[in-house]
Picture (cartoon, rainbow, N blue to C red):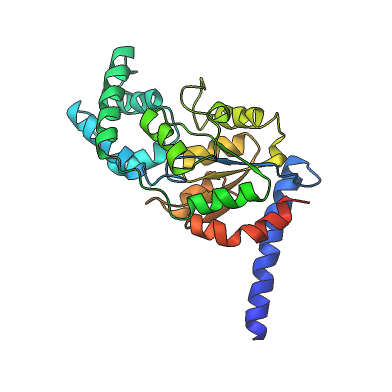
Length: 257
């Protein structure tokens, strides 16, 4: 029993240090949580596997070498940047404007055919939980897939306002640039970074959130190792949205006065 108590105390001390370390690093006295910024693919929808498959098939059709796994690492980047990354690597030059348009159109077509619209388990539960607690919920996604964005309204009714969403259509620089999350803070009411947290699942998204100065919780719903998300700068790495739901009350005690 003493060993169990000691282990639990150690976990709590580590958790306290994680939150305090963020405050010290960014020179804040405390958190003033007002909103939760959610990535979409891999956080709200179990759609990344379809993105990866559609990207891989498209690249095969255009005779560009790739693997499904690498697209999990590019998640959050706008489509044209993903295409340019592959073309530059495989052909030693930037992709042309026409190539970007053609490749992305084909990828979008395939994704629409493959995607089942599955939700991440406990995503809706968690979104409803934070909203019931008086917190706002905003989506910040690198996606430009209209079908997926439209599906938000059906799967998460009355949870997200389209005018407050940040998508690939809204930004000049996609993740890992901080612009998407800085825009999210602006749309949330010109908030300071310590007034929000980010829920992400991809290293590029984590890098964008960290660059924007926001406390970042990574939920590893894909095949990449936890360490990749930690190395990208995530303050906390969890195995699922269920784990976030289960631990939220503890986290909230640090985030809300």
